[in-house]
Length: 271
Length: 216
Image 1: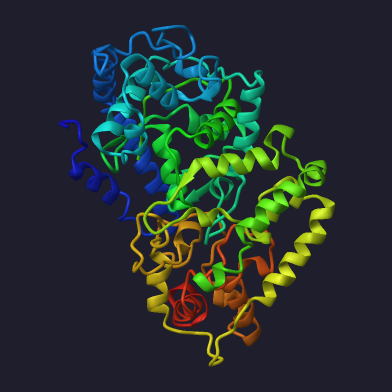
Image 2: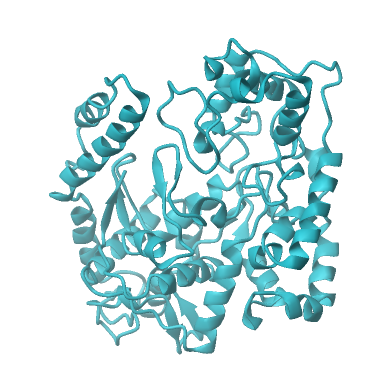
């Protein structure tokens, strides 16, 4: 991973904003410094490396059947990758389910390649199997960069996924009483210095939905939306969501449909 | 923690309530008919798994959580009456310090306020729980990395005065935040067993001690 951001640069960016006297000034400059840092990174998003390895995984014969994923139907027909991510999640007739990109990839790995996908569901994030899936999402989402989000809620199961996702979004539980809405239900809020999009509104939903999968500078990792949702629930003090479960797809449906019409900017880059 | 958590409605009761009360609940529910209680319960069950020290038992809601999980209903006219009930019941849960002393050590309070650790599935069972305070509040202005989900607490003691009444009210807010705002975003640190009594005393001192940087 030659693309890791030199830590000296991070330190410089952070220190340069810490030497002002007035607190309000410091706060603004801290935010500006981080913003400038993000801008600088856009010139060379390390996510491109993940896109390349994702494309390789897409084209390479693999699994017990030793075939590639190139015939996978992501919703626009077998093998059509361009623009497919902008229209996910969606209802698929063959599985009779609403699927997001990652649950659909599992279907294709199972049906086309004969892979036992239970191992991929169980694997921890940041291990080989999950990293393969994340790389595939980098490649496939990249092929929708610039497209408009166009997610249907017309099919009864799509409508149901949206409604269940909405209900889940507001569901409070655990020792801290947190729901998704605790952090993502109001405009202009932050955790520490991190801005929080209000996902209940179009503007906030698009800020979230259209920029994942993303390369995370702080960890040097590429994260998919499933990983993002997983870590939100961890911090909510919830039990762990099952990878690619109906629950995670429903939440994605709620976010994606709220973001309809916005322009996909994936893979993104984040703090 | 386990003691307070046990107050949470048992799973069987929830399932029964969800199933038997479904038509009535849906009549007033703002959820679409496809997000009915039965479908939702099935989705929860298949959607979560145990991890680390965290089990799916945590998905069971108490009455306050259930009430606040439907904002449209909670914010309705009927909701206002229920909210007042929740606040009254929440206030009744507050246990004031046995020795009558509300203020501990503000320096340790600052440490607890800074820490966001504890109770996630990646935390060990022995991990001391933090208060997560700076995640949502400005407190000591020297800390520039603070969140804005809650109000600024800078000058809290200076503005409120360090009277016994302020101490009791502040203690109640930290112990059970729902005691004055049914659907407050703030965790119930005492009621849910997140923080120990001494941690809460130390946070009290951070907010109210005249020597705390919060009031300088």
